[in-house]
Image 1 (cartoon, helix red, strand yellow):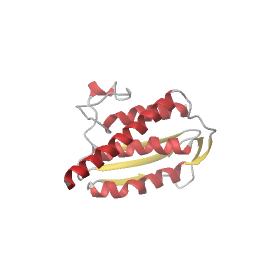
Image 2 (image 1 turned 180 degrees about the vertical axis):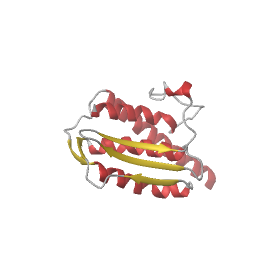
Image 3 (image 1 turned 120 degrees about the vertical axis):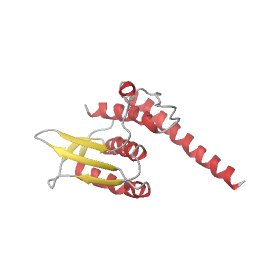
Image 4 (image 1 turned 45 degrees about the vertical axis):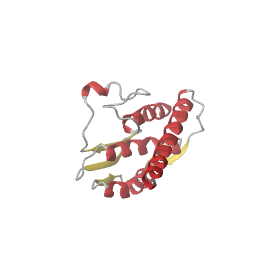
Length: 162
C-alpha cells in the first residue's frame, strides 16, 4: 500500500509539473508573460544555479562546476525567465550525463554580448533528433516527460531576449 501511495504521489507531482510547463509554454507563445526588463547580474545567476543543482549532481555522481568572470556581467531582461531557461538546461545536462561525468556552466562576456553555456559529457542528441528538439511535444526515444521537451521552453524564453 505504501508503494502505491508513493507512486501516486510521484505521478501527481509529474503531472503538476507538466501542466505548469504547458501553461508557461502557452503564455510564452502568446507573449502574455512579457514584463519590463531590469538589470540582471549574470554572475549571481550562474553561481546561484550551480549551487542550487550541486546536491542533485553530487547524488548522481556528476561533477558540476561553473566558470564565471571576475568582473560582474549585467544584462537587461526578465531575471526569473532567464533563471528558468538556464535551470532547464542544467537539469537536462545532469539528467542525461552518466555517473562520473561532468557538467560545466560558464558565463563569457565580450564587448556587448554574453554567452551562458551548459556543457556536459552526456549522451548527446542524435543528429536526426536535433532539428525537432525545440518542437513543443517532441519526445526522444519515448521519453514520456521531462527530457527534451524542456528545450521548447528554452527556445521560447530565449526568443524573448532577442
